[in-house]
Amino acid sequence: MRCLALIPVCAAAVAASQDWPEFRGTGRQGVSQATNVPISWSAAAPGNWIAEVPGAGWSSPSVSSGHIFLTTALGDGEKEPLRLEVLAHRTADGAIAWRTPVLPREPGKLPSIHDKNGQASPTVLVDATHRRLFAHFGHLGTAALDLDGRILWQQPDLGYVPVHGNGGSPALVGDTLVFSCDGGRDPFVVGLDAGTGKVRWKTPRNTHAKRTFSFCTPLAVEVGGKTQVVLPGSGFVAAYSPDDGSELWRVRYGEGYSVVPRPVFSGGLLLIGTGYDAATLIAVRPEGARGDATDSAIAWKIAKGAPNTPSVVADGTHVFFVSDAGIASCAELATGKVLWNERLGGGFSASPVLFEGRILFVNEEGVATVVKASPTFEVVARHELGERTLSSPAVVDNAVYLRTAGHLRRIGAVPPR
Image (cartoon, rainbow, N blue to C red; front, top):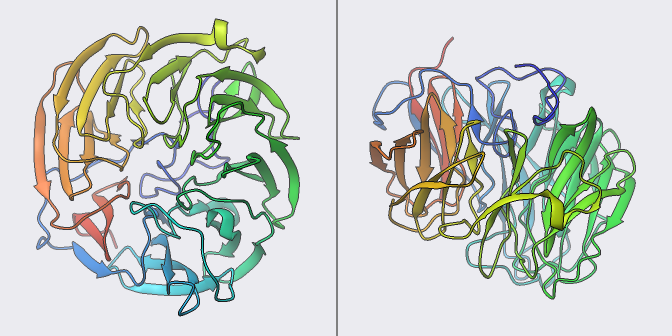
């Protein structure tokens, strides 16, 4: 994979297809280059396993260096201390290789959270090049560890007023760790020095939306030979300079709030979800955008079936998405023309993954549906995990990793020795 203009910024060393190092994978957009991904699932097949995960959390699996990394939370924070931990499970058998407590807290009342959230929702980001990982817990803080579980630094001082708990995951852009702090008031974006955890820059959101809280994950893209960090929030999406956090451009979408979907960049278009109360999927042309580009940069909009929570996925020709209510859709990427809407059933929070010409959707009841990535709707397979899940799957060579309530699962062939 080469790093070209008008595609998401690639890591210095592209991870192998055995890796899924952050939320939405190596390319950060839910597209897997993996091969031999299982379509027929059987928990009893050789090499498959189910492992217990201590505590509670909905961070999605990150896979790198022979391990699956998760975060979890133990204790209620009041009667007993809240304990935040980073976990490393072995890919070979699911056993826990290490677990490290981070960001210690004194007992005390915690802000309320949504019943579909928890204290450990953001996904671990693995930087295999520098053999480190970043575990983010929203308003509770951020920590860096090495791949053996030793703490490199902790940053607990960026507190803000959360609404419904934690959500968005961080993005690593060069040596700057970027994430949103879109709380109940005074929302901002921050860039940390990835080596020390110190604040490099902090940029106010300057939104006019009445509800300022959102939970989005940044996406770095290269436009016109320069890197931009695209990050939706309440009322607008903006691009920021990774060097100093300055805002480069913005596109407004009214009162949209609680924005969750991570942006996707395909065919020169940024695909942005606008959040609640009435979700819309908008396509934005970042090339040439400056200042307030609302009137010039929007290519098309789709309202019917647009997701509030799951991110979308695109293959350069089509965009595929599923609404929170379980309606899957396919549209032309260039025009936004909808080609099909089909009911998958159940509620959805997890983001879909595109692999080998197919798309994996997993609903909140643990029903996995595989469909062809095609302008004609066709179901390839459907499987029931028998356990609730809100986490997005990780798709690598020969395997799919899924976090469900209380468990981590590997579905696939025997891992290579």
